[in-house]
Length: 89
Image (tube, rainbow, N blue to C red; front, side, top):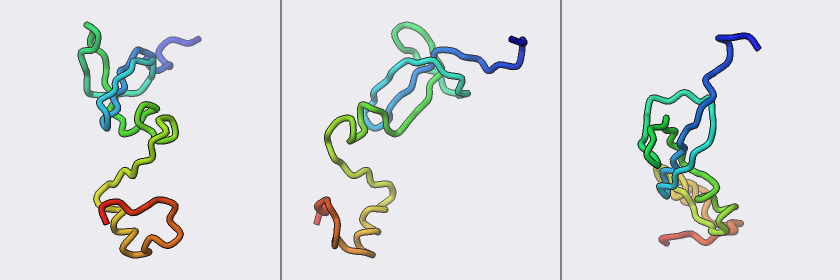
């Protein structure tokens, strides 16, 4: 392999922001943030959903509402045909 053309493949910490779950894996992703994890400093990548918080993997159905999008949709279209009950009504 030629030198200088491949990205830096290193250990990186991914942090699920919804449940504060962290895990280490190897990646070439570029990031400005770092974190102290298990006594070492690693690059940090913040993510919204991981296998620890995703409803498919946890078996818990929850609606992640970003800026009222779910409520706005329900006001516009109602709950007709919805498989989930409206929360907070």
